[in-house]
Length: 117
Length: 115
Image (cartoon, rainbow over all chains, first blue to last red; front, top):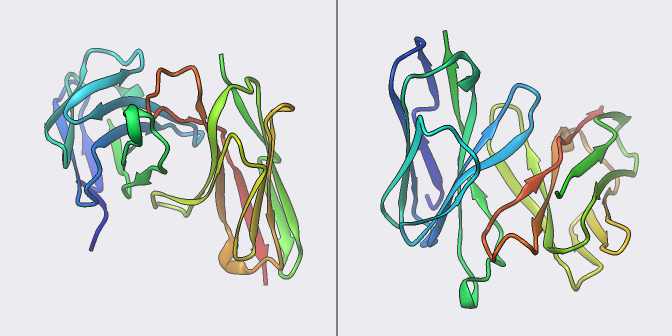
């Protein structure tokens, strides 16, 4: 199936731990994103990578570090997890238009529900 | 700073009704506006994308309009069905975001269509 996939779907962990979430897309897109959806369902962009280059970093604590080994993968590593990190994290991808103008729609993964105890 | 607001936050209608969801944004400098659907425990599915030069887009029973100058968009759902029950999210792509893919989302309207 062509899609954006994330692992794991659920992640429950203790405060202070370090965890990673993986994202893969097989849509041939060159741009990938991480979004955070809080308990009030508000969705906010965290990071964006184009061709493995970081192009958006939205005042996210440096405990969050994205890594893009290739255009099809964008992983999110979180150090020293805090209670406030509990949320649903969505990965998305899109295909850029000409001249790096982003005109195409974004395709979202199913989300990873992170619970920090 | 671009802000996106959706009204109402929740809506419950009987099956078969036509309904309108509203989205407003504070800065008219946008590349496009998109409507997404989110089912409980699932990711987002893109429904319609309207470029800044367009006024509306249609897909099946869905019609989205865009009035960029007034900072408003509506999503019209005709002949609603129980399967339409979901949260509908509006998102704008700011023109001033340096040609990135950044989207700014509203908080969504949760729709329940009763059989």
